[in-house]
Amino acid sequence: MPVSILIVEDTADLLEAMKLVLRAAGFAVITAETGKSALQLLTNVRSGLIAPDVIVTDIRMPEMNGLELIRAIRAIPEFVKTPIIAMTGEDKIALVHAEEFGANVTLQKPLDPNVLIENINKLIKSKQA
Image (cartoon, rainbow, N blue to C red; front, side, top):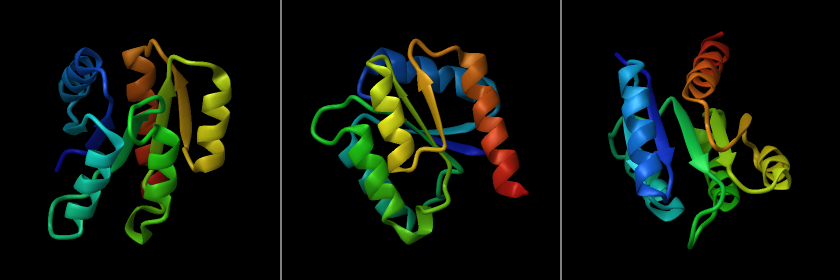
């Protein structure tokens, strides 16, 4: 069964590009364009959908930003240990806050697809260990 990744990104072009790169790398990809829709997806997981193995989220998004999303995910018992990668093209302070809120890895945009894949693989290995 392929490893599943939830990508939360409000920029449609970037979301599509990440989806293509991760699918080409052999991952199953689920997407959400807002923090709220990502939380809705994760709530539906409890009713039988397959939970993502890793969550990749943008920090700067309208409505609910990535920091709020990370905090909300960490408050759900089933997802306390789910690895989260937070990313932003903004200032590095947002990445520090993301770690404080519970992100396992933080990445600066523009993303290098190989670095993203490498980090996902590391998180999956440590999750299985």
